[in-house]
Length: 315
Length: 290
Image (cartoon, rainbow over all chains, first blue to last red; front, side, top):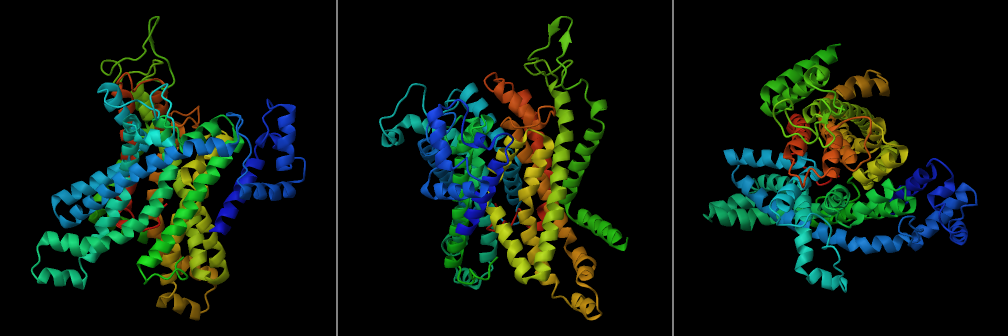
Protein backbone atom coordinates (compact mmCIF):
# COMPACT_ATOMS: atom_id res chain seq x y z
CA UNK A 1 0.00 0.00 0.00
CA UNK A 2 2.77 2.40 0.95
CA UNK A 3 4.63 1.32 -2.17
CA UNK A 4 1.58 2.08 -4.32
CA UNK A 5 1.14 5.46 -2.69
CA UNK A 6 4.80 6.26 -3.25
CA UNK A 7 4.54 5.43 -6.96
CA UNK A 8 1.41 7.53 -7.32
CA UNK A 9 3.11 10.46 -5.59
CA UNK A 10 6.09 10.04 -7.91
CA UNK A 11 3.89 10.03 -11.01
CA UNK A 12 2.18 13.13 -9.72
CA UNK A 13 5.53 14.84 -9.08
CA UNK A 14 6.55 14.32 -12.68
CA UNK A 15 3.19 15.32 -14.13
CA UNK A 16 3.39 18.62 -12.31
CA UNK A 17 7.06 19.08 -13.19
CA UNK A 18 6.33 18.53 -16.88
CA UNK A 19 3.80 21.32 -16.99
CA UNK A 20 4.58 23.86 -19.66
CA UNK A 21 6.65 26.84 -18.62
CA UNK A 22 8.96 27.54 -15.77
CA UNK A 23 9.14 24.72 -13.20
CA UNK A 24 8.74 27.37 -10.54
CA UNK A 25 5.26 27.89 -11.86
CA UNK A 26 4.16 24.73 -10.10
CA UNK A 27 4.60 26.37 -6.71
CA UNK A 28 4.99 30.08 -7.11
CA UNK A 29 2.42 32.45 -8.45
CA UNK A 30 3.95 35.51 -10.09
CA UNK A 31 1.74 37.71 -7.93
CA UNK A 32 3.22 36.41 -4.68
CA UNK A 33 5.41 38.95 -2.90
CA UNK A 34 9.18 38.69 -3.20
CA UNK A 35 9.39 37.46 0.37
CA UNK A 36 6.75 34.75 -0.07
CA UNK A 37 8.48 33.56 -3.22
CA UNK A 38 11.77 33.29 -1.38
CA UNK A 39 10.25 31.21 1.41
CA UNK A 40 8.61 28.79 -1.03
CA UNK A 41 11.82 28.56 -3.07
CA UNK A 42 13.64 27.34 -0.01
CA UNK A 43 10.86 25.16 1.30
CA UNK A 44 10.61 23.20 -1.95
CA UNK A 45 14.23 23.59 -3.05
CA UNK A 46 13.12 24.92 -6.41
CA UNK A 47 16.62 26.22 -7.19
CA UNK A 48 18.12 22.75 -6.77
CA UNK A 49 18.42 19.97 -9.38
CA UNK A 50 15.42 17.79 -10.12
CA UNK A 51 16.40 14.75 -8.07
CA UNK A 52 16.94 16.88 -4.99
CA UNK A 53 13.59 18.54 -5.57
CA UNK A 54 12.07 15.08 -5.68
CA UNK A 55 13.61 14.20 -2.32
CA UNK A 56 12.35 17.42 -0.81
CA UNK A 57 8.92 16.83 -2.34
CA UNK A 58 8.66 13.42 -0.67
CA UNK A 59 9.89 14.76 2.65
CA UNK A 60 7.37 17.59 2.55
CA UNK A 61 4.64 15.17 1.60
CA UNK A 62 5.39 12.99 4.62
CA UNK A 63 5.26 16.05 6.83
CA UNK A 64 1.95 16.97 5.22
CA UNK A 65 3.43 20.12 3.72
CA UNK A 66 1.82 20.77 0.34
CA UNK A 67 2.63 24.40 -0.35
CA UNK A 68 0.32 27.40 -0.68
CA UNK A 69 -2.73 27.71 -2.85
CA UNK A 70 -2.46 30.52 -5.40
CA UNK A 71 -6.12 31.25 -5.35
CA UNK A 72 -6.91 31.17 -1.64
CA UNK A 73 -3.61 32.62 -0.44
CA UNK A 74 -3.52 30.03 2.28
CA UNK A 75 -1.73 26.73 2.86
CA UNK A 76 -3.16 23.85 0.86
CA UNK A 77 -3.66 21.84 4.04
CA UNK A 78 -5.85 24.56 5.52
CA UNK A 79 -7.93 24.96 2.39
CA UNK A 80 -8.50 21.22 2.09
CA UNK A 81 -9.33 20.69 5.72
CA UNK A 82 -11.99 23.39 5.50
CA UNK A 83 -13.92 21.53 2.77
CA UNK A 84 -13.12 17.93 3.65
CA UNK A 85 -15.90 17.54 6.28
CA UNK A 86 -18.53 18.53 3.68
CA UNK A 87 -17.34 15.80 1.35
CA UNK A 88 -17.40 13.25 4.14
CA UNK A 89 -20.99 14.11 5.17
CA UNK A 90 -22.14 13.92 1.58
CA UNK A 91 -20.43 10.58 1.06
CA UNK A 92 -21.66 9.04 4.30
CA UNK A 93 -25.29 9.93 3.75
CA UNK A 94 -25.14 8.74 0.14
CA UNK A 95 -23.47 5.47 1.12
CA UNK A 96 -26.03 4.78 3.82
CA UNK A 97 -28.95 5.42 1.45
CA UNK A 98 -27.34 3.43 -1.37
CA UNK A 99 -26.41 0.41 0.74
CA UNK A 100 -29.71 0.12 2.61
CA UNK A 101 -31.77 0.40 -0.56
CA UNK A 102 -29.28 -1.65 -2.55
CA UNK A 103 -29.23 -4.58 -0.12
CA UNK A 104 -33.00 -4.65 0.29
CA UNK A 105 -33.64 -4.37 -3.44
CA UNK A 106 -31.01 -7.03 -4.12
CA UNK A 107 -32.79 -9.46 -1.79
CA UNK A 108 -36.09 -8.63 -3.42
CA UNK A 109 -34.81 -9.22 -6.95
CA UNK A 110 -33.22 -12.53 -5.96
CA UNK A 111 -36.53 -13.52 -4.41
CA UNK A 112 -38.39 -12.71 -7.62
CA UNK A 113 -35.92 -14.72 -9.67
CA UNK A 114 -37.27 -15.47 -13.12
CA UNK A 115 -40.28 -13.22 -12.81
CA UNK A 116 -40.97 -10.22 -14.93
CA UNK A 117 -40.26 -7.79 -12.11
CA UNK A 118 -36.70 -9.12 -11.98
CA UNK A 119 -35.99 -8.07 -15.56
CA UNK A 120 -37.56 -4.68 -14.96
CA UNK A 121 -35.47 -4.20 -11.84
CA UNK A 122 -32.26 -5.14 -13.59
CA UNK A 123 -32.91 -2.87 -16.53
CA UNK A 124 -33.69 0.00 -14.14
CA UNK A 125 -30.44 -0.65 -12.29
CA UNK A 126 -28.51 -0.63 -15.54
CA UNK A 127 -30.11 2.75 -16.24
CA UNK A 128 -28.69 4.16 -13.01
CA UNK A 129 -25.25 3.01 -14.07
CA UNK A 130 -25.51 4.32 -17.62
CA UNK A 131 -26.91 7.76 -16.78
CA UNK A 132 -24.26 10.44 -16.28
CA UNK A 133 -24.36 11.40 -12.58
CA UNK A 134 -24.26 15.11 -13.31
CA UNK A 135 -27.24 14.77 -15.62
CA UNK A 136 -29.28 13.04 -12.91
CA UNK A 137 -28.29 15.93 -10.65
CA UNK A 138 -29.37 18.47 -13.25
CA UNK A 139 -32.80 16.88 -13.61
CA UNK A 140 -33.30 16.73 -9.84
CA UNK A 141 -32.28 20.38 -9.59
CA UNK A 142 -34.57 21.48 -12.40
CA UNK A 143 -37.54 19.62 -10.96
CA UNK A 144 -37.19 19.87 -7.19
CA UNK A 145 -35.46 23.14 -6.72
CA UNK A 146 -36.41 25.31 -9.68
CA UNK A 147 -39.81 24.03 -10.61
CA UNK A 148 -41.25 22.84 -7.30
CA UNK A 149 -39.03 25.00 -5.13
CA UNK A 150 -38.73 22.35 -2.41
CA UNK A 151 -34.94 22.22 -2.18
CA UNK A 152 -32.22 24.85 -2.44
CA UNK A 153 -30.38 25.06 -5.75
CA UNK A 154 -26.86 24.64 -4.42
CA UNK A 155 -24.26 25.25 -1.76
CA UNK A 156 -24.12 23.85 1.75
CA UNK A 157 -25.93 26.72 3.45
CA UNK A 158 -28.07 29.68 2.53
CA UNK A 159 -26.21 32.84 1.62
CA UNK A 160 -24.93 34.66 4.69
CA UNK A 161 -25.34 31.78 7.12
CA UNK A 162 -22.34 31.30 9.36
CA UNK A 163 -22.22 28.35 11.68
CA UNK A 164 -20.54 28.76 15.04
CA UNK A 165 -18.94 25.34 14.77
CA UNK A 166 -18.98 22.08 12.85
CA UNK A 167 -21.46 20.77 15.43
CA UNK A 168 -23.80 23.68 14.99
CA UNK A 169 -23.79 22.94 11.26
CA UNK A 170 -24.51 19.27 11.77
CA UNK A 171 -27.40 20.05 14.10
CA UNK A 172 -29.08 22.55 11.83
CA UNK A 173 -31.95 21.31 9.67
CA UNK A 174 -31.01 23.78 6.91
CA UNK A 175 -27.77 21.88 6.38
CA UNK A 176 -29.60 18.64 5.68
CA UNK A 177 -32.00 20.50 3.48
CA UNK A 178 -29.01 21.44 1.32
CA UNK A 179 -27.39 18.04 1.64
CA UNK A 180 -30.36 15.99 0.48
CA UNK A 181 -30.34 16.40 -3.31
CA UNK A 182 -26.59 15.92 -3.82
CA UNK A 183 -26.61 12.92 -1.49
CA UNK A 184 -29.54 11.43 -3.38
CA UNK A 185 -27.74 11.87 -6.70
CA UNK A 186 -24.59 10.25 -5.37
CA UNK A 187 -26.69 7.45 -3.88
CA UNK A 188 -28.29 6.73 -7.26
CA UNK A 189 -24.81 6.48 -8.71
CA UNK A 190 -23.56 4.16 -5.95
CA UNK A 191 -26.70 2.03 -5.78
CA UNK A 192 -25.85 -0.37 -8.60
CA UNK A 193 -22.89 -2.07 -6.95
CA UNK A 194 -24.52 -3.21 -3.68
CA UNK A 195 -27.76 -4.09 -5.44
CA UNK A 196 -26.31 -6.33 -8.14
CA UNK A 197 -23.72 -7.79 -5.79
CA UNK A 198 -26.36 -8.62 -3.19
CA UNK A 199 -28.57 -10.20 -5.81
CA UNK A 200 -25.88 -12.44 -7.24
CA UNK A 201 -24.68 -13.43 -3.75
CA UNK A 202 -28.22 -14.32 -2.77
CA UNK A 203 -28.52 -16.55 -5.82
CA UNK A 204 -25.26 -18.28 -4.89
CA UNK A 205 -26.14 -18.70 -1.23
CA UNK A 206 -29.61 -20.02 -1.99
CA UNK A 207 -28.02 -23.11 -3.53
CA UNK A 208 -26.10 -23.90 -0.36
CA UNK A 209 -27.02 -26.96 1.68
CA UNK A 210 -27.94 -25.10 4.85
CA UNK A 211 -30.51 -23.02 3.00
CA UNK A 212 -32.03 -26.18 1.52
CA UNK A 213 -32.02 -27.62 5.00
CA UNK A 214 -33.87 -24.65 6.43
CA UNK A 215 -36.37 -24.88 3.62
CA UNK A 216 -36.91 -28.57 4.23
CA UNK A 217 -37.52 -27.91 7.89
CA UNK A 218 -40.61 -26.10 6.66
CA UNK A 219 -39.59 -22.60 7.69
CA UNK A 220 -41.44 -19.80 5.95
CA UNK A 221 -39.95 -18.27 2.83
CA UNK A 222 -39.45 -14.90 4.51
CA UNK A 223 -37.56 -16.52 7.35
CA UNK A 224 -35.35 -18.60 5.06
CA UNK A 225 -34.57 -15.63 2.87
CA UNK A 226 -33.81 -13.10 5.57
CA UNK A 227 -32.46 -15.18 8.41
CA UNK A 228 -30.49 -17.80 6.53
CA UNK A 229 -29.64 -16.54 3.07
CA UNK A 230 -29.43 -12.76 3.38
CA UNK A 231 -27.23 -12.76 6.46
CA UNK A 232 -24.47 -14.58 4.69
CA UNK A 233 -24.95 -12.91 1.34
CA UNK A 234 -24.51 -9.56 3.09
CA UNK A 235 -20.88 -9.99 4.10
CA UNK A 236 -19.22 -9.41 0.72
CA UNK A 237 -21.51 -6.43 0.14
CA UNK A 238 -20.31 -4.81 3.35
CA UNK A 239 -16.75 -5.43 2.19
CA UNK A 240 -17.54 -3.81 -1.12
CA UNK A 241 -18.50 -0.71 0.80
CA UNK A 242 -14.81 -0.02 1.35
CA UNK A 243 -14.32 0.02 -2.40
CA UNK A 244 -17.51 2.09 -2.66
CA UNK A 245 -15.99 4.81 -0.49
CA UNK A 246 -12.99 5.09 -2.77
CA UNK A 247 -15.31 5.08 -5.75
CA UNK A 248 -17.48 7.81 -4.23
CA UNK A 249 -14.47 10.08 -3.71
CA UNK A 250 -13.90 10.07 -7.47
CA UNK A 251 -17.57 10.31 -8.41
CA UNK A 252 -17.98 13.28 -6.11
CA UNK A 253 -16.08 15.53 -8.45
CA UNK A 254 -18.97 16.01 -10.85
CA UNK A 255 -21.82 15.89 -8.37
CA UNK A 256 -20.27 18.49 -6.08
CA UNK A 257 -19.84 20.76 -9.08
CA UNK A 258 -23.47 20.44 -10.20
CA UNK A 259 -24.74 21.31 -6.73
CA UNK A 260 -22.00 23.82 -5.95
CA UNK A 261 -21.32 21.70 -2.87
CA UNK A 262 -18.21 23.07 -1.18
CA UNK A 263 -16.28 19.82 -1.02
CA UNK A 264 -13.04 18.24 -2.11
CA UNK A 265 -14.19 17.30 -5.62
CA UNK A 266 -15.34 20.77 -6.50
CA UNK A 267 -12.12 22.14 -5.04
CA UNK A 268 -10.13 19.93 -7.40
CA UNK A 269 -12.12 21.12 -10.42
CA UNK A 270 -11.68 24.72 -9.38
CA UNK A 271 -7.96 24.25 -8.78
CA UNK A 272 -7.43 22.67 -12.19
CA UNK A 273 -9.43 25.31 -14.04
CA UNK A 274 -7.58 28.17 -12.33
CA UNK A 275 -4.19 26.45 -12.75
CA UNK A 276 -3.77 26.36 -8.98
CA UNK A 277 -1.14 23.62 -9.15
CA UNK A 278 -0.34 23.13 -5.46
CA UNK A 279 -4.01 22.86 -4.56
CA UNK A 280 -4.76 20.46 -7.43
CA UNK A 281 -1.81 18.33 -6.41
CA UNK A 282 -2.88 18.25 -2.76
CA UNK A 283 -6.51 17.40 -3.52
CA UNK A 284 -5.47 14.67 -5.94
CA UNK A 285 -3.04 13.07 -3.49
CA UNK A 286 -5.71 13.00 -0.81
CA UNK A 287 -8.32 11.41 -3.10
CA UNK A 288 -5.80 8.83 -4.32
CA UNK A 289 -4.73 8.15 -0.74
CA UNK A 290 -8.29 7.41 0.34
CA UNK A 291 -8.74 5.12 -2.65
CA UNK A 292 -5.56 3.14 -2.08
CA UNK A 293 -6.32 2.83 1.61
CA UNK A 294 -9.88 1.64 0.94
CA UNK A 295 -8.69 -0.95 -1.59
CA UNK A 296 -6.32 -2.18 1.09
CA UNK A 297 -9.08 -2.31 3.71
CA UNK A 298 -11.29 -4.22 1.28
CA UNK A 299 -8.54 -6.79 0.70
CA UNK A 300 -8.10 -7.35 4.42
CA UNK A 301 -11.83 -7.50 5.17
CA UNK A 302 -12.28 -9.86 2.29
CA UNK A 303 -9.79 -12.36 3.61
CA UNK A 304 -10.99 -11.95 7.20
CA UNK A 305 -14.60 -12.62 6.32
CA UNK A 306 -13.88 -15.45 3.96
CA UNK A 307 -11.02 -17.67 5.11
CA UNK A 308 -11.02 -19.43 1.76
CA UNK A 309 -9.35 -16.38 0.30
CA UNK A 310 -5.68 -16.18 1.05
CA UNK A 311 -4.27 -12.68 0.91
CA UNK A 312 -0.94 -13.93 -0.40
CA UNK A 313 -2.31 -15.89 -3.31
CA UNK A 314 -4.82 -13.36 -4.39
CA UNK A 315 -3.70 -10.96 -7.08
CA UNK B 1 -8.36 -15.93 -41.89
CA UNK B 2 -9.84 -18.99 -40.28
CA UNK B 3 -9.73 -17.28 -36.91
CA UNK B 4 -11.67 -14.26 -38.16
CA UNK B 5 -14.30 -16.46 -39.73
CA UNK B 6 -14.68 -18.40 -36.52
CA UNK B 7 -15.07 -15.21 -34.50
CA UNK B 8 -17.66 -13.85 -36.93
CA UNK B 9 -19.74 -16.98 -36.80
CA UNK B 10 -19.47 -17.13 -33.02
CA UNK B 11 -20.54 -13.50 -32.79
CA UNK B 12 -23.51 -14.26 -35.01
CA UNK B 13 -24.59 -17.16 -32.84
CA UNK B 14 -24.08 -15.12 -29.71
CA UNK B 15 -26.27 -12.34 -31.07
CA UNK B 16 -28.98 -14.74 -32.11
CA UNK B 17 -29.16 -16.24 -28.66
CA UNK B 18 -28.85 -13.12 -26.60
CA UNK B 19 -31.63 -10.59 -27.17
CA UNK B 20 -29.90 -8.05 -24.98
CA UNK B 21 -26.70 -8.19 -27.00
CA UNK B 22 -28.71 -7.85 -30.20
CA UNK B 23 -30.41 -4.73 -28.83
CA UNK B 24 -26.99 -3.32 -27.99
CA UNK B 25 -25.64 -3.90 -31.47
CA UNK B 26 -28.74 -2.36 -33.02
CA UNK B 27 -28.34 0.77 -30.89
CA UNK B 28 -24.72 1.09 -31.99
CA UNK B 29 -25.74 0.64 -35.60
CA UNK B 30 -28.42 3.30 -35.27
CA UNK B 31 -25.98 5.86 -33.85
CA UNK B 32 -23.31 4.88 -36.33
CA UNK B 33 -25.63 5.66 -39.24
CA UNK B 34 -26.53 9.00 -37.68
CA UNK B 35 -22.84 9.82 -37.25
CA UNK B 36 -22.11 9.09 -40.89
CA UNK B 37 -25.07 11.03 -42.24
CA UNK B 38 -25.02 13.82 -39.66
CA UNK B 39 -24.73 16.62 -42.25
CA UNK B 40 -27.76 15.25 -44.10
CA UNK B 41 -29.90 14.69 -41.02
CA UNK B 42 -29.13 17.89 -39.14
CA UNK B 43 -31.22 20.79 -40.45
CA UNK B 44 -28.74 23.48 -39.36
CA UNK B 45 -25.04 24.03 -38.75
CA UNK B 46 -24.74 23.28 -35.00
CA UNK B 47 -22.45 26.27 -34.45
CA UNK B 48 -24.59 28.79 -36.31
CA UNK B 49 -26.56 31.41 -34.45
CA UNK B 50 -29.79 31.30 -36.37
CA UNK B 51 -31.70 34.44 -37.11
CA UNK B 52 -34.94 35.28 -38.74
CA UNK B 53 -34.37 38.53 -40.59
CA UNK B 54 -32.63 40.74 -38.05
CA UNK B 55 -34.02 38.80 -35.13
CA UNK B 56 -31.85 36.14 -33.45
CA UNK B 57 -33.80 33.02 -32.54
CA UNK B 58 -32.78 32.83 -28.88
CA UNK B 59 -34.39 30.29 -26.55
CA UNK B 60 -37.02 29.09 -28.98
CA UNK B 61 -39.23 26.32 -27.58
CA UNK B 62 -39.45 23.05 -29.51
CA UNK B 63 -41.73 22.82 -32.50
CA UNK B 64 -42.04 24.43 -35.88
CA UNK B 65 -38.68 25.05 -37.50
CA UNK B 66 -36.78 23.76 -34.48
CA UNK B 67 -37.51 20.18 -33.50
CA UNK B 68 -35.95 20.59 -30.05
CA UNK B 69 -35.85 24.36 -29.84
CA UNK B 70 -32.78 26.57 -29.74
CA UNK B 71 -30.14 27.43 -27.15
CA UNK B 72 -29.81 30.80 -25.47
CA UNK B 73 -27.41 31.72 -28.28
CA UNK B 74 -29.90 30.75 -30.97
CA UNK B 75 -28.28 27.47 -31.99
CA UNK B 76 -30.42 24.54 -33.08
CA UNK B 77 -30.46 21.90 -30.33
CA UNK B 78 -31.49 19.01 -32.56
CA UNK B 79 -28.59 19.66 -34.94
CA UNK B 80 -26.17 19.77 -32.02
CA UNK B 81 -27.59 16.49 -30.78
CA UNK B 82 -27.07 14.86 -34.18
CA UNK B 83 -23.52 16.13 -34.54
CA UNK B 84 -22.81 15.10 -30.95
CA UNK B 85 -22.92 11.45 -32.00
CA UNK B 86 -19.60 11.86 -33.77
CA UNK B 87 -17.33 12.79 -30.84
CA UNK B 88 -19.17 10.30 -28.63
CA UNK B 89 -18.47 7.38 -30.95
CA UNK B 90 -14.94 8.60 -31.74
CA UNK B 91 -14.00 8.86 -28.08
CA UNK B 92 -15.76 5.64 -27.18
CA UNK B 93 -14.24 3.47 -29.87
CA UNK B 94 -10.76 5.03 -29.76
CA UNK B 95 -10.49 4.61 -26.00
CA UNK B 96 -11.94 1.12 -26.14
CA UNK B 97 -9.42 0.15 -28.82
CA UNK B 98 -6.42 1.21 -26.72
CA UNK B 99 -7.91 -0.35 -23.62
CA UNK B 100 -8.48 -3.64 -25.40
CA UNK B 101 -5.04 -3.82 -26.99
CA UNK B 102 -3.11 -2.75 -23.88
CA UNK B 103 -5.23 -4.76 -21.45
CA UNK B 104 -5.12 -7.91 -23.56
CA UNK B 105 -1.36 -7.72 -24.09
CA UNK B 106 -0.62 -7.15 -20.42
CA UNK B 107 -3.00 -9.94 -19.44
CA UNK B 108 -1.59 -12.38 -22.00
CA UNK B 109 2.05 -11.79 -21.13
CA UNK B 110 1.40 -11.69 -17.41
CA UNK B 111 -0.65 -14.86 -17.35
CA UNK B 112 1.55 -16.82 -19.72
CA UNK B 113 5.03 -16.08 -18.43
CA UNK B 114 4.04 -15.81 -14.74
CA UNK B 115 6.91 -15.41 -12.29
CA UNK B 116 8.79 -12.13 -12.22
CA UNK B 117 7.19 -10.55 -15.29
CA UNK B 118 3.77 -11.34 -13.89
CA UNK B 119 4.73 -9.86 -10.52
CA UNK B 120 5.89 -6.59 -12.06
CA UNK B 121 2.94 -6.23 -14.43
CA UNK B 122 0.39 -6.97 -11.72
CA UNK B 123 2.10 -4.48 -9.41
CA UNK B 124 1.63 -1.85 -12.11
CA UNK B 125 -2.00 -2.91 -12.43
CA UNK B 126 -2.48 -2.49 -8.68
CA UNK B 127 -1.07 1.01 -8.92
CA UNK B 128 -3.41 1.83 -11.80
CA UNK B 129 -6.29 0.70 -9.57
CA UNK B 130 -5.15 3.11 -6.88
CA UNK B 131 -5.43 6.16 -9.12
CA UNK B 132 -8.86 7.78 -9.02
CA UNK B 133 -10.13 7.71 -12.57
CA UNK B 134 -12.20 10.87 -13.08
CA UNK B 135 -9.84 13.16 -11.12
CA UNK B 136 -6.87 11.78 -13.05
CA UNK B 137 -8.50 12.50 -16.41
CA UNK B 138 -9.48 15.98 -15.26
CA UNK B 139 -6.00 16.85 -14.02
CA UNK B 140 -4.32 15.54 -17.15
CA UNK B 141 -6.73 17.15 -19.59
CA UNK B 142 -6.84 20.36 -17.57
CA UNK B 143 -3.08 20.71 -17.81
CA UNK B 144 -2.36 19.22 -21.22
CA UNK B 145 -5.04 21.27 -22.87
CA UNK B 146 -8.61 20.59 -23.86
CA UNK B 147 -8.55 18.27 -26.83
CA UNK B 148 -10.49 15.14 -27.56
CA UNK B 149 -7.29 13.14 -28.01
CA UNK B 150 -5.95 14.17 -24.63
CA UNK B 151 -9.16 12.84 -23.12
CA UNK B 152 -8.78 9.57 -24.99
CA UNK B 153 -5.14 9.29 -23.91
CA UNK B 154 -5.89 9.99 -20.26
CA UNK B 155 -8.56 7.29 -20.27
CA UNK B 156 -6.41 4.79 -22.12
CA UNK B 157 -3.66 5.28 -19.54
CA UNK B 158 -5.88 3.90 -16.78
CA UNK B 159 -8.81 1.89 -18.12
CA UNK B 160 -6.76 -1.10 -19.34
CA UNK B 161 -6.43 -2.25 -15.73
CA UNK B 162 -9.73 -4.16 -15.55
CA UNK B 163 -9.20 -5.91 -18.86
CA UNK B 164 -5.66 -6.90 -17.91
CA UNK B 165 -6.75 -8.53 -14.65
CA UNK B 166 -9.57 -10.52 -16.19
CA UNK B 167 -7.58 -11.62 -19.25
CA UNK B 168 -4.70 -12.71 -17.03
CA UNK B 169 -6.89 -14.96 -14.90
CA UNK B 170 -8.37 -16.44 -18.04
CA UNK B 171 -4.95 -17.07 -19.54
CA UNK B 172 -3.87 -18.81 -16.35
CA UNK B 173 -6.48 -21.49 -16.95
CA UNK B 174 -6.14 -21.68 -20.73
CA UNK B 175 -2.39 -22.22 -20.59
CA UNK B 176 -2.91 -25.46 -18.65
CA UNK B 177 -5.19 -26.93 -21.28
CA UNK B 178 -3.96 -29.91 -23.26
CA UNK B 179 -3.79 -28.26 -26.70
CA UNK B 180 -1.31 -25.74 -25.32
CA UNK B 181 0.70 -28.57 -23.87
CA UNK B 182 0.60 -30.34 -27.24
CA UNK B 183 1.84 -27.24 -29.04
CA UNK B 184 4.68 -26.89 -26.56
CA UNK B 185 5.73 -30.52 -26.96
CA UNK B 186 5.71 -30.19 -30.74
CA UNK B 187 8.23 -27.38 -30.38
CA UNK B 188 6.19 -24.23 -30.92
CA UNK B 189 7.86 -21.05 -29.69
CA UNK B 190 6.46 -19.08 -26.77
CA UNK B 191 5.25 -16.28 -29.01
CA UNK B 192 3.53 -18.75 -31.32
CA UNK B 193 1.77 -20.46 -28.43
CA UNK B 194 0.78 -17.12 -27.01
CA UNK B 195 -0.70 -15.57 -30.13
CA UNK B 196 -1.79 -18.55 -32.19
CA UNK B 197 -3.06 -20.92 -29.52
CA UNK B 198 -3.99 -18.88 -26.47
CA UNK B 199 -5.03 -15.48 -27.84
CA UNK B 200 -8.00 -16.69 -29.94
CA UNK B 201 -9.48 -18.25 -26.80
CA UNK B 202 -9.51 -15.05 -24.83
CA UNK B 203 -10.43 -12.74 -27.69
CA UNK B 204 -14.20 -12.88 -27.06
CA UNK B 205 -13.56 -11.81 -23.47
CA UNK B 206 -11.46 -8.86 -24.52
CA UNK B 207 -14.17 -7.81 -26.97
CA UNK B 208 -16.72 -7.85 -24.17
CA UNK B 209 -14.45 -5.70 -22.04
CA UNK B 210 -13.93 -3.43 -25.00
CA UNK B 211 -17.68 -2.90 -25.31
CA UNK B 212 -17.89 -1.93 -21.65
CA UNK B 213 -14.95 0.43 -22.08
CA UNK B 214 -16.86 2.26 -24.82
CA UNK B 215 -19.52 3.07 -22.24
CA UNK B 216 -17.08 4.24 -19.57
CA UNK B 217 -15.21 6.35 -22.10
CA UNK B 218 -18.35 8.12 -23.32
CA UNK B 219 -19.50 8.77 -19.76
CA UNK B 220 -16.10 10.16 -18.84
CA UNK B 221 -15.87 12.38 -21.89
CA UNK B 222 -19.31 13.74 -21.01
CA UNK B 223 -18.24 14.41 -17.42
CA UNK B 224 -15.01 16.11 -18.48
CA UNK B 225 -16.81 18.29 -21.02
CA UNK B 226 -19.50 19.10 -18.49
CA UNK B 227 -16.86 20.37 -16.08
CA UNK B 228 -15.65 22.70 -18.82
CA UNK B 229 -12.46 20.87 -19.77
CA UNK B 230 -13.80 19.58 -23.08
CA UNK B 231 -12.61 20.37 -26.55
CA UNK B 232 -14.10 23.81 -27.28
CA UNK B 233 -14.18 23.19 -31.01
CA UNK B 234 -16.24 20.02 -30.71
CA UNK B 235 -19.92 19.95 -29.87
CA UNK B 236 -20.36 16.82 -27.79
CA UNK B 237 -23.30 15.81 -25.62
CA UNK B 238 -21.27 16.64 -22.55
CA UNK B 239 -20.56 20.09 -23.97
CA UNK B 240 -24.29 20.61 -24.63
CA UNK B 241 -25.06 19.78 -21.01
CA UNK B 242 -22.30 22.11 -19.86
CA UNK B 243 -23.72 24.84 -22.07
CA UNK B 244 -27.23 24.27 -20.74
CA UNK B 245 -26.02 24.26 -17.14
CA UNK B 246 -24.04 27.48 -17.32
CA UNK B 247 -26.77 29.21 -19.34
CA UNK B 248 -29.37 28.75 -16.60
CA UNK B 249 -31.41 26.29 -18.65
CA UNK B 250 -32.29 24.56 -15.36
CA UNK B 251 -33.95 27.55 -13.76
CA UNK B 252 -35.81 28.33 -16.97
CA UNK B 253 -37.10 24.78 -17.05
CA UNK B 254 -35.74 24.24 -20.57
CA UNK B 255 -36.08 20.47 -20.31
CA UNK B 256 -36.02 20.14 -24.10
CA UNK B 257 -32.43 21.37 -23.96
CA UNK B 258 -30.79 19.17 -21.33
CA UNK B 259 -32.90 15.99 -21.35
CA UNK B 260 -32.10 14.72 -24.91
CA UNK B 261 -28.28 14.70 -24.66
CA UNK B 262 -28.48 12.74 -21.41
CA UNK B 263 -30.80 10.18 -22.97
CA UNK B 264 -28.44 9.77 -25.92
CA UNK B 265 -25.47 9.20 -23.59
CA UNK B 266 -27.51 6.70 -21.62
CA UNK B 267 -28.54 4.77 -24.73
CA UNK B 268 -25.02 4.41 -26.07
CA UNK B 269 -23.65 3.40 -22.67
CA UNK B 270 -26.49 0.94 -22.17
CA UNK B 271 -25.72 -0.58 -25.56
CA UNK B 272 -22.22 -1.37 -24.31
CA UNK B 273 -23.63 -2.88 -21.11
CA UNK B 274 -26.12 -4.98 -23.05
CA UNK B 275 -23.43 -6.43 -25.24
CA UNK B 276 -21.29 -7.05 -22.20
CA UNK B 277 -24.20 -8.48 -20.28
CA UNK B 278 -23.31 -11.99 -21.25
CA UNK B 279 -19.98 -11.40 -19.60
CA UNK B 280 -21.39 -11.44 -16.06
CA UNK B 281 -19.54 -8.19 -15.55
CA UNK B 282 -22.60 -6.15 -14.84
CA UNK B 283 -24.86 -8.75 -13.32
CA UNK B 284 -22.20 -10.38 -11.20
CA UNK B 285 -19.90 -7.54 -10.31
CA UNK B 286 -16.63 -8.64 -8.83
CA UNK B 287 -15.69 -7.07 -5.56
CA UNK B 288 -12.94 -5.11 -7.18
CA UNK B 289 -14.51 -2.87 -9.70
CA UNK B 290 -12.95 0.55 -9.58
